[in-house]
Image (cartoon, rainbow, N blue to C red; front, side, top):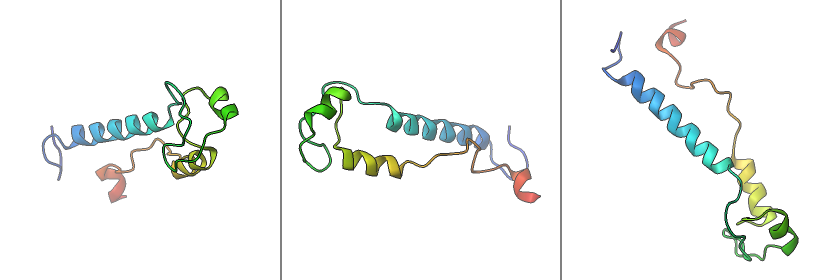
Length: 89
């Protein structure tokens, strides 16, 4: 059911895209799983044993993990595409 200027299925495509983006974001935020690595997966530096014990399954050194966490941006939870009505106001 499309209305106005949108084609059939456009609403469903937007909802699916929003769900997929949120799932990807959740996968990135999920904690480490499995066995810890001795070397960082990004830069190859040694991961200290204390970090491996404290965070089982850790794959990144502190520096690389900090860079990755800084790259993740918090979202408001609002559909950024916006509805046609909100754009016309």
